[in-house]
Image 1 (cartoon, one colour):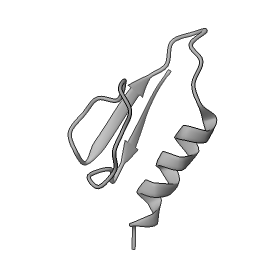
Image 2: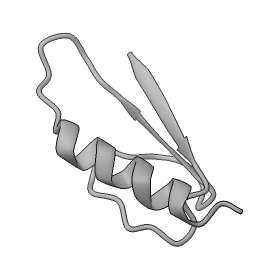
Image 3: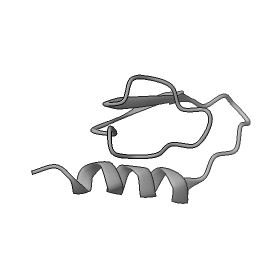
Image 4: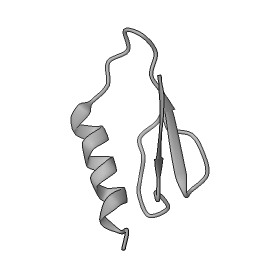
Length: 51
């Protein structure tokens, strides 16, 4: 599974996210653990600057 977060130019991302400043993508592989708290925080930060 892969997901992309847009509107990310002002955010700092941990290792594992790729892409240009305005969008970041991360590929999750089966069995790989990921942080729901981190993903929620990044999505909230990206959305908070939208008008």
